Image (spheres, rainbow, N blue to C red):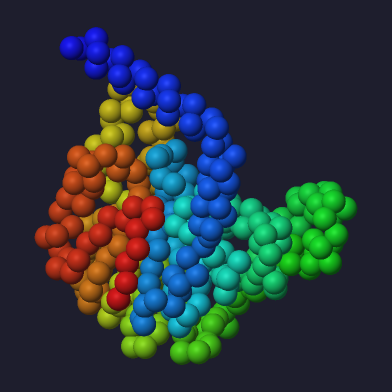
Length: 343
């Protein structure tokens, strides 16, 4: 009985293989059509009458399983705004089917590499794949120099591609982003950097010494308020931007875990790693201090990103926010790459 069953299965397998081979061209055509038709989600920016947030990167310079380093996409007023574009961001956005050629503007919080490492990739990809206008990239003073550096790095690539594809040569201006530098008047703590169609975006300095300037961004639309911190320690200078926010997407540092890990590193002879961990503590946002500040600011939802140490599994994720709920009564979300939130 078993032998007959195995024989029958073998016959079916052989017949199926033969049929697939005979129809291989039709199957290939079907696969190609499916791939070509699976384009970007053109409705992402328009299908919510409020603010929608895609956490496209939760990583940091630490090597981790995060899809990308710092990256937060915001849809408001039918437009797409990207805040930071760390390594892996372009792939992460593609995985979420975001039409990156439709980005209204990119905002960079500061010039640590994990916050702008994929900027050149984003600009270059837009030129190659049909963006119609040069991408505006706004950030602290120094932004023009960063963009000029990318132009130099990609100059040969542009020359080769333009020679091979004349339509790219005609659109070569798109290969060069437009840098917009944010300067503050003396004593100013906030500057409006975008105001169109009901969406306003303000830049505010945050505390990330020795990085100066480092910026956070406050986006407001239809009475809703979103603050994106960039990298910062918990500091009173951040409080006004956080005040009454519906959502705060904030860098996060589980100090209780890092401090526990440092002596373990030293016992294992990992002195270099221990020293690096010690040096990062002062200029990142300790989770407990952050919870206290969010409560004082009246924040409704706190979304943790730029996660250190990166919670690689469910157990570590459960431990990551230990003690925060004792001080913050709003919702706490430990972000994951690809997570979509709306309010």
